[in-house]
Image 1 (cartoon, one colour):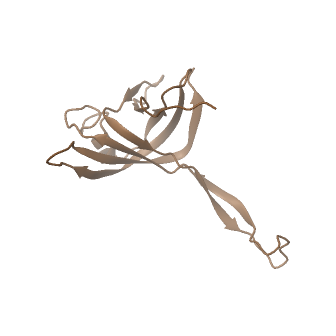
Image 2: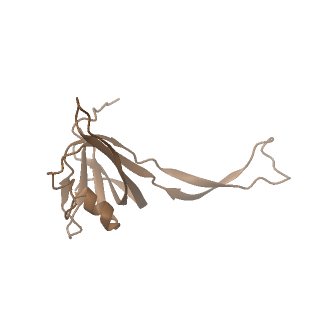
Image 3: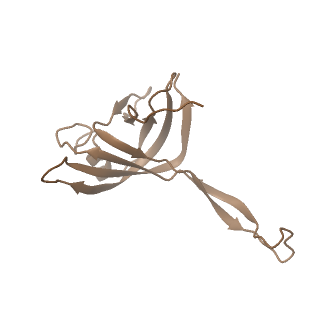
Length: 149
């Protein structure tokens, strides 16, 4: 069984061009997600033959959210309120392509998805510590997990 450390994983933003180029978001500490889920519908009937258990069918699927813990630096182009920055993506309200490139795979394996920045916050400015914060992305549609060509 292979095991891979998370260090070196990249979170990147696409530029929307064709072919699309991706820029690594600076100073990301931790990445959580995606968390794929499906809704269910109860189809239990009076003549249920499942020995007293409910019956279900699958509904629509959802890719969930991605959360970034990052070390905040207002001078970083990928953080600020300018083209390509996370604050700009939040203020603009439009979806962009992002990808997560886990470390340790050759060829590179990655998650590719379209998402909206839906949360900026939990910013901390400690007396004895590093400025940090959280960014939340809501994934639109189905993410892809593929090998890079």
